[in-house]
Image 1: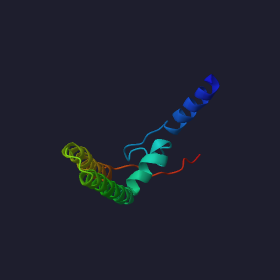
Image 2 (image 1 turned 90 degrees about the vertical axis):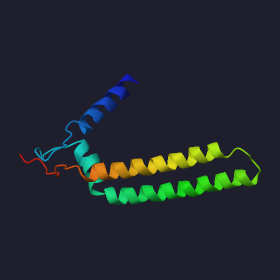
Image 3 (image 1 turned 180 degrees about the vertical axis):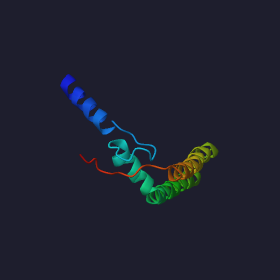
Length: 114
């Protein structure tokens, strides 16, 4: 188990060894190349996909609330506040993250030449 943990920690250390958050160092490997840059370049697609998931969650929440109301449950306001409060909060967080990530500047990947 210790060997497995050691190998895992070494691989994580290798993947995130150089995080390039600015254009000053364009020869970065690690998290910037494999995680940050693809998210930055595809943020519009990711945002649209997340909005579709949020819309589907809103439909499911509305159906659950309507179903409980039709069953005669008297106290549905806390259910409405929880579901729709979470959906509205998720929408604003998603919009903030899209604006924040799209305004960042990241260096482009260039292979290291010897």
